Image 1 (cartoon, one colour):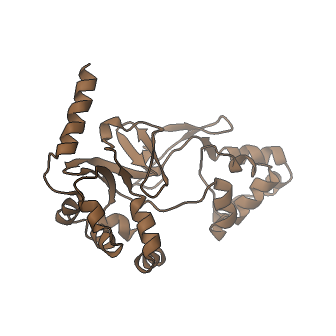
Image 2 (cartoon, helix red, strand yellow):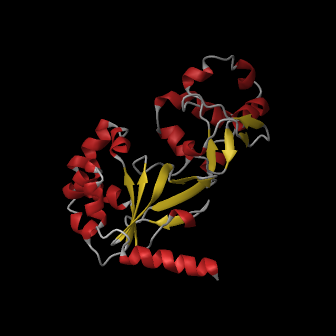
Image 3 (cartoon, helix red, strand yellow):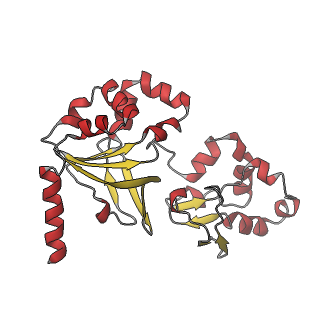
Length: 256
């Protein structure tokens, strides 16, 4: 009963507005200048101002936008249709996604029709891999600050490896040779620690090429069942791979 009352209290607080500002006003006042500029450029200011439409906005910081490749930013700034799609991919309509209710495996549909997948690693919460920071309750919904821009990604790991960066050509070939390419085409989910071509050059791969079983075991050592975003990695944590081996995570200055 107490939990139900608490839930109702929090939802009412959100609906009436603990902070009287609209979401758009808050973003302006709090220095989300890149996001505000893009919202204006997409002609979506009114949607973020509208006090009659409750929504949750996952708001990338200016630092998050700095990490987006220049070529992608140019596309966003010159293609209004694409820009609207990306911005609305950060919005959940008619819902208040509060941090206290985020659980591992939770999914929501964005205003762009894309799927937002949530994960929880101890006290760290993520949405599509972007780390979430706090709840800000406003007159027309909730703002959750995130440290990455939510951009569309490939459907499967095999697609990304096959069609993506040229630095994974050896991995692509080895997955086919080990007959694992089809496995990574399945829904999963999987997490892959993907060796680059440069990494493979540091070892003698000839014994693996002539022993398909050994090659498959080595590749499975790099694959986890489930979704593990980088934000969820902590120093010293152990992970079980598809081969059944235990990996220990070591982080130094944020680097894996």
